[in-house]
Length: 267
Image (cartoon, rainbow, N blue to C red; front, side, top):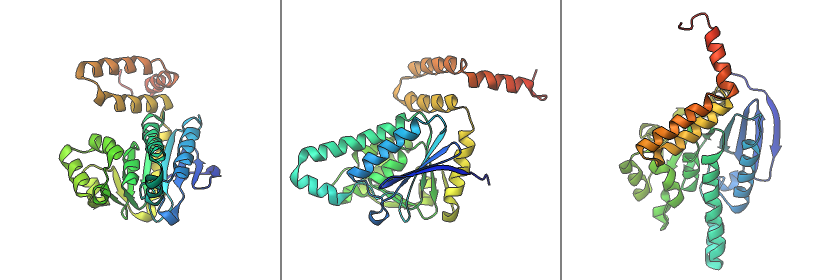
């Protein structure tokens, strides 16, 4: 297993960030509330994503939660208080959540979710908005909003793009919870590892990815996110444009040179 030496760490009130080599890690740190998303946590999380997303020394971002949970979703105690007093406070919180999903999709670096425990409701939506999801064998996933008279509205946007319609509707309409092995089987996540190995395995995975060309990673993520929204011909045209763009980068030129210098390169 690759060893990664920690070079810096910064602690916030309820979000902590660390950098190990070219991997930046964000940890949701409200364990007493199962890392539920209140306004303060959302504010700190958005700031942490901005900081790591803009750090040229970070190639990949890892998002995890302080044990025992990944994220329990929206803080319903805070939401209930807002609902009874101020409609616009609820509106502002929903808009803040929307910005978080947009930030994860548009961050110019891959984001890997290390799901260490329950990821439910908005917490499941948070994991699904990441580019890659690696889960502990103790992790569980679900959208229980319908059981509370609510709708998994923003979480639905990512879910509908990840799994088929029937699988997505089953999860959304029943509100049932699935274990990590079923989440893997239905295509909700990428990999399951033993709980004790989760963080080392994710850091090894992310470190290997971060060694790739930053421009190639960014353009791959951007194109992959955009292609489903385009019709076939426009998607091909956009792919052509990205192909032309990436071939002009320093990383691509270096890649050509390195490949050509290999003794076993085809001639």
